[in-house]
Amino acid sequence: METTNTLLLAEFFTATGYLDRLLFAFTELERLHYGPRGKNQIQKLLNDSNMFFINEFKDFDLVSTPTEWAQFKTQLKSYHMVIESFIKTPFKSARKEAMVVNYINLIYRNCFEIHNFIIETTNLDIQFPRLGLIQEESIPTITQAEEANRAPLFYLDEKKLQTYSEENAKKNSPLVFLEMRREEKYEYYLHKGHYFIAQKNYEEAKANFYKARNYKETAEVLTLLAWTYSLLDNRTQAKAYCLKAVQLDSQYGPAYNDFGNYILAEGQITESLRWFELAKRAHNYQNREYPYINAGRAHVLLKDFDQALTEFSLALTIAPHHHELHETVSKLKASLEKGRPQYNTTPEERGPGPLNS
Image (cartoon, rainbow, N blue to C red):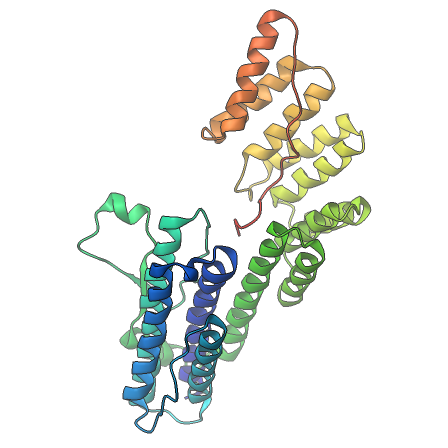
């Protein structure tokens, strides 16, 4: 019983965490809920939830239908609290499991529509839920090319839940659940931190990154804290957190890159190149072009324009769609051909940027 309830609760938090991230982007970042299609999407989510409670809880009485976002958010939160309490009730029944699975899949169906609306209308990159027991449902009407640019439709298979529950009944599943819950909270506060960075509210960003760190200390969150401190003009703390990140994970590239940036800004040009080289060699680095760009900037300051061009060109092979980099390479090539190298340093490059988490 405890294993099944624990798994249900973990999957419920995964689904609601995904929905929270989408609604945060949908309403706070892009304000999509103000448009006609956005209003319809939000109303559909509420209607689906209302119908679920009316059908499953026969004595459920919907007093009124919210019309404002704040009311809707409160209503949705109350529904989630009911389901959470229901999962935690100390009894096992097939009906209970089926009901919770149905509600989780209701959330995923709406997430599918909301996420694809966000993809169609914005450049935001919202993280998918972690694949625990959920699966991706194939949609026959969507081609492979279309599928590559769409969010998948996730669902929880009740039979898979039962099988997994039986197989893991003797394992220490409460610890697994706590870890999953911690992961969800970590991702939630990282996302909020990025949001406040985009709003230039660096103190709030720092507070949310600290909250994320309380749930899980990673090189990623330490580097983000360093970045926030740098934006608050506290380079000493920024460097200290980068060094902590390196100590925690020697293969996390952004920590090396950002430390190099901070000492480059202090005039330690040659030393910064050593850190950019370490960033290039690190295995864990999604935006691998950044240390090459920054190394190029350092070589420009050293007036080694040929090496700067080499670094920028290498960065371009990694990020061929970087338009500013194309312009930089073209201008530097033209200047070298004329024998009068001219180059204006671009804004400090780092990774990852706001809203890419």
